[in-house]
Amino acid sequence: MLRITDDIAIADWELTESFSRSSGPGGQNVNKVETAVELRFEAARSPNLPEPVKKRLKRLAGRRWTLDGAIVIRAEETRSQLRNRELARERLAEMIRAALVAPKRRIATKPTLGSKRRRLAAKTARGQVKALRGKVEED
Image 1 (spheres, rainbow, N blue to C red):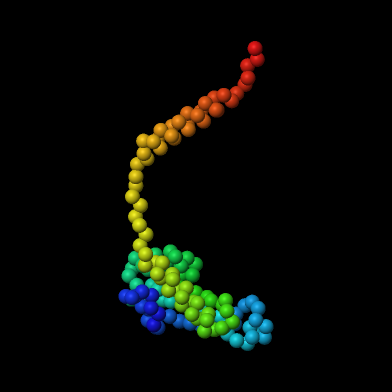
Image 2: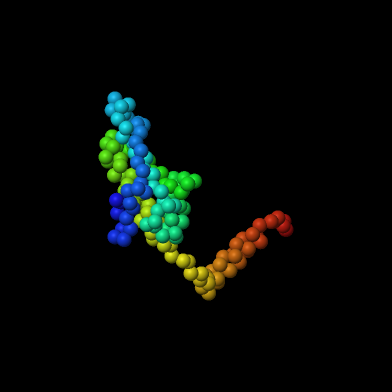
């Protein structure tokens, strides 16, 4: 059970972990111990997440979202399999917490009178600079 917030928790059947050999430094250890963790979360089928959260999660996950609606997170930073498992689960929890926050709707506002005047004054000044360009008449 992975607890996200007080009311949202992810059941163990929704998470699948697979292990593989990690890349990078590690000497002989890296050649024989499977420390890299690939955490797969069936997000689209999860009964614990509301539909709008799933949509935001899909956008946040990006290319980690598979065609069948799962999120795949790979962790291979440390040489410890246990620590990599914790890192992968924490990343998933952070991603879901970010998806829980609904974005604020933007309220359209009109430009202020001062900003309109400044814009027009800048346009006039720029037009005068451009008007001064051209051929110089000789006397």
